[in-house]
Length: 184
Ligand code: IMP
Ligand code: MG
Image (cartoon, rainbow, N blue to C red; front, side):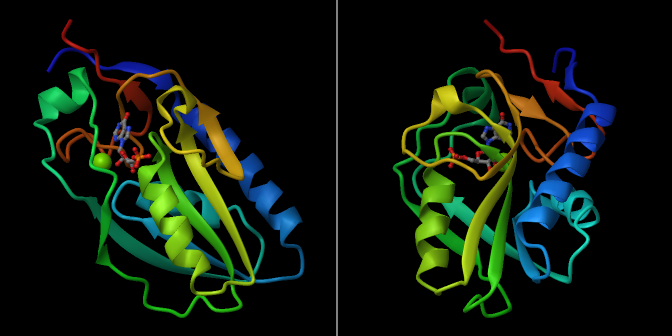
């Protein structure tokens, strides 16, 4: 693997996550929140974000995977990943979402397939409110018209790792968000 280049530093991430936490605290002032993180990429972001929200809160996690043939890590990096658009649940939440204020926490909004599926699923459980918080957004890759309510950083179409994001399961523990250079 060639050299990784820092795109967003740990300091920039920390500052932005404080701002996002303040925004959520304001929007839900006096109420409680159920954070639901998408495994595994959002685990680190959720733990930092939730600690910056000064409200009564609970955590939960959901697991998803895409149908279709997942490309090799090299193909995913260099060409991208065009799934069939079908997403399946590999782990459901443990708590009921009915009449709760749900903040769905995701690492990155890319084509929008995952969050479109999850939004529909969550709304069918009749929450009191439903919001999406994503650390990163790649708007140029969008295939479905979904947007997040809280966005950390909008980034160009680069493959990034670190702060929870992986390439073939590696690099999730990097404190900064880094670009993996494409090979051509
Ligand atoms: P979407 O369904 O296309 O929006 O895909 C979102 C998922 O794709 C994320 O939860 C990530 O797991 C993965 N993904 C998209 N872009 C990147 C990236 O640049 N680095 C690592 N994972 C990514
Ligand atoms: Mg991933």
